[in-house]
Image (cartoon, rainbow, N blue to C red):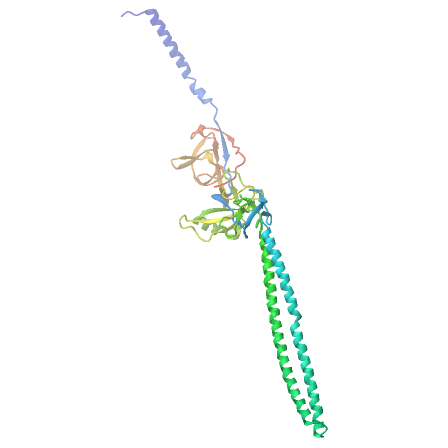
Length: 432
């Protein structure tokens, strides 16, 4: 085998240079590793604090006092005096029906009232009774004259100064006048009874026609349909020219009161019992609630619990709670979905750490802490409720511990780090 010596020596020299270079670099590697600075991490010092615990529940708004506007009389719509979707006030005119038939009924009823009142006034004059009493007075006068004639003739007949026939005629006239007086008295009583009955009947007729007049006036008022309550009005289901009937199953429109807006949400039976143990119903009604809308914005006005339903739903094991929220801008409508945030508890002297500082590996939770020598320690923890973007730590940490929040990927157990204060971002409402 023939070897090209110049090339062989050249290759040997190149290998020697490379080995020499590697040997030179291997010696200062430890020195350079020792000179690498400790990686910076952001840490927060654990401080016990008091925090409220919030619970959130799926909720839906609804209209407690929605009113269907209906016609109370029959007629054709002549005017519609509102804009669909506008806010109306109680008593505002919404529709006008054809008023002419009802105006005619009112005029007719007024005429009947006037006639009945005239009949009543005539009955009260008691013309027939006055005539009967006058006839009775005349008969009583004739009776008195007949008695005087008899009394005058009796002594004259005894003295034979007058004929017996004259006395007999006078006595017969007296008896006839007595009978006539009795008859006139009976006629007066009968006439008085008839007059009283006529007055009562006429008074009843007056009351009846006055009631008919009032009904005609009410129908005329009902022909002008007004808003029964204040709120947001819906679409008109019968247009101008359409027939309105008081027996129609279809309403003319609907009005929904929007301020306040009602919200319903459901809690579990266990949550309701636990809440009752912590507080009474009066305190629950006074506790403010927050309404979180579908776009995650918070309604600016706090609400309060108003009532609960009277039984637990056996299918879901939940109890419905109803609350109200002020809605002065009327921007929340019935049927919207959202969440209700409730202050469920208030914890004292608890330890909180940011949620991103807690690592979860196969169900085991842990955090990295930094000791006094700035060495990283791995600590197992037990978490409780979530408060905003933080966890409540039940076990594993104590006040004064420094927990790594940012730079966890750079931390290794027993490694030295450069701790820097962690600055939490502002904003965000606590919630569970």
